[in-house]
Length: 88
Image 1 (tube, rainbow, N blue to C red):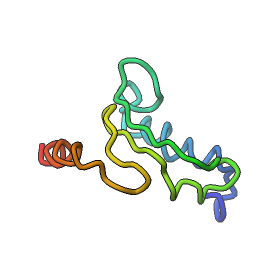
Image 2 (cartoon, rainbow, N blue to C red; image 1 turned 120 degrees about the vertical axis):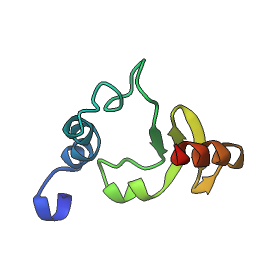
Image 3 (cartoon, rainbow, N blue to C red; image 1 turned 45 degrees about the vertical axis):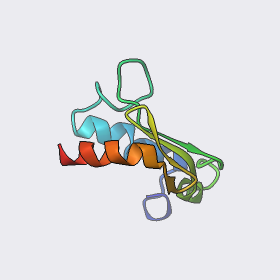
Image 4 (tube, one colour; image 1 turned 60 degrees about the horizontal axis):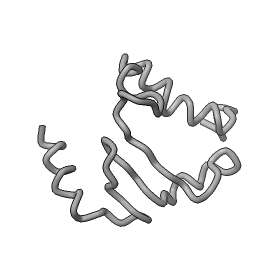
C-alpha cells in the first residue's frame, strides 16, 4: 500500500487494523486498544512509521491479552491455548 498506493505508513497501518475491523463490523470488539476490547497487540522494537519493515521483527505478541510469542518464538505454555481457540 505504501509503495504502490502512495499511502503513508500511518495510513497503511490504519487501513490494515482499525479500518479492517470497521469493514468487518468488529470495531466494538477489536479496532483499538481500550478497556472491554480483545487485547491483541504486537510490540515492536522499531518504529513502523519510519520503516514498515520494522513490523517483521516483533518483540512481543499478545493474543486475547496473553503473551503468545517473544522475539519470533512461540511461548510454549500459551501454545496449547492458541491451538484450542483455533479449533473453536
